[in-house]
Image (cartoon, helix red, strand yellow):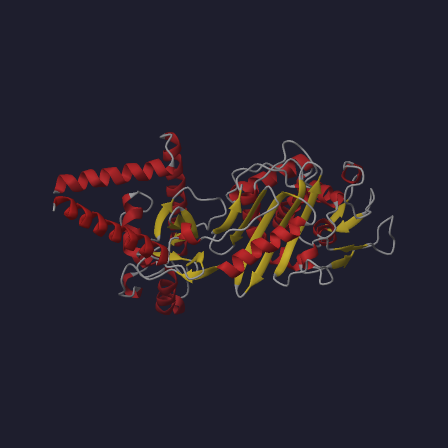
Length: 471
């Protein structure tokens, strides 16, 4: 009898285990880690990133240090566009023309030639002309070395952590390197530059007269995914840059747009023509297997965010939820059909130099261990700041937490007819205070030799200790 009972229990246990195995096998997972799409790349490193959410949709060795070759010129163009007018004139020096590798890309520009910044940028981005890169660098900064310093400063502002540029062209230098992730950040910045995209929208451009080509040399786009007659043409691609050196292999950065989504892909240390095949695979993965979903109500809680910012001494105690805003509607990038269950967020306080002036934090959305969206939280001065020092008779009875825009509208109706718009200086002062608080916070963490993650853990522990004492 006893052995029969044991057999029955064993049989029941086996049935339960079988049921659990079948249930697990048949139940669809919504976990990002389980469903995140993948692909095979020939490239040693690669990435595809959503420009608007900042989410990495796929990566292979994205933080590995690699040589970029001529995709460097995307950063060169961004620095030039930031510091020059397109009509400025650039004179080509002997060093600019001849301090390049023999046989490397050029636009047949000679010492003493004078071209506009616009012409130089077309030669730079379409033809990958190295003499144009050198001349633009000298025009902007006085020397290639000084210009490389500007490139590195701009890269740091964009959040690049594994990049160092030694020249504006991408010609090989052991001290000239980047990562796939950093180049994706640079590509995202390029996609936000209207002038950059206007240049890249052209597949050919005729330069002004030069000594070697008095009738004007025509330069042509070299990125084959932008050329309609090419077997690699892709209608989604709107911009990009090729690169090659013996040490770097084939490199390619590509910006694409489809159905309102913007993606940037990068492949490094690839082979020809697989750099195009790999890029198409990355874009197909991004556009076809992932989607952007609006952040669901309740995940972003303004009141909780305001309380957290106050607790972490990022904003002053009188900050209200209504003082906070996010510049655009928030989306998260997920595998198609994925649920937002399990999405959490972390606040980052050490912001990139490219962050908006009034940003006090960045909210990073996570599903499992992957960042699926990044947005800056900005703080507006409240109406109490705007109405400060205004005569009592002109003040409007409104809540002290109305946003700046609303406050200005009300204030305008109240006092515009009287002559002067008062209080604008106070807005400026409030923004300066916000910046000072961010700088002070960053310095405090540095002085404490503590990372932001360690600080958050410490704050959480103190909150838990405080909560236990109350109970």
